[in-house]
Length: 313
Image (cartoon, rainbow, N blue to C red; front, side):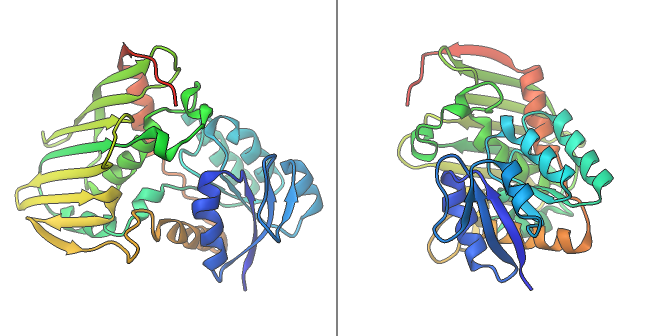
């Protein structure tokens, strides 16, 4: 029997990924939306969350697709109303508020899920399995994309709390923290801030690995032409490369599997997230892994700030 869910925030990611994933799932019924800027055809629409919570006690799950800064208040209201909550990445604007939301969920006895869609990319699980018994020599992340293509006119990403280039960069960090058998921590960062923006447009990171492996990451939002989402790993048993954000995998130069038929790097990620959410609700469990967000917070704490030329969409 399908569960009723409300989708809050009907923007680009909701229309591109959440709505189609819910429509294709036998586990979910999209029963309502909350947005000031539009809805979904055939689905009851509300202008504010409290109106939804008051009018639809039959909807037990709320999926939040809002920008990170306003998300806490929405999540807290849903949790206090006894609804299960699913959080688009990043799960909040600060680590403290994410911990507070988890505490609320435990106190209320409902599920909360901090989603990391890139962990559900087609080849991430296979990469994790291959690396599980290998000794790491090096890992290099190259995550370069065109912000104008992926976030057109989204001013919130340039405002304090919007993360800037870490909005996509945290996807890479979610994969790294998933596939490595050992935890790592940040040791240095350089953050490039356009002089007219509150968040960085590029970043370079260095990490400490417990066995001395060389680890780094480069994020850049000024890439034109081909987009680059690559993780290159060298181990005692050879090399592993994830490309297209984890959709393609090669080991020692041999391609292990291709991405889904349409070639989309995001194909299948959100359906798997919603399947996980359904399992959490049915079991009454919580999944609030904050490891990727911890690295971002550490980058802002440790990062050397460099001012670069202004950037306008």
